[in-house]
Image (cartoon, rainbow, N blue to C red; front, top):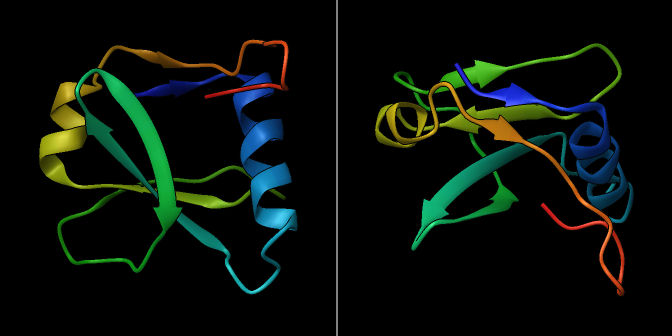
Length: 82
């Protein structure tokens, strides 16, 4: 299962704060990069939840690709990035 660091949860919460109507984020994995977008829960999705944080959704394929990986948000010159 994907491990989400505290810095990543904070970054996801900050993204959600700019869109208050969005409570669920979908993680996509393309070309070695993880991106997030507004999500709608589908029956086979893997759901990662943490109290007080946005809910994360992963398709079965993305969940397999990111299993045993860590999602973190290192600080860059611009800001924290996933």
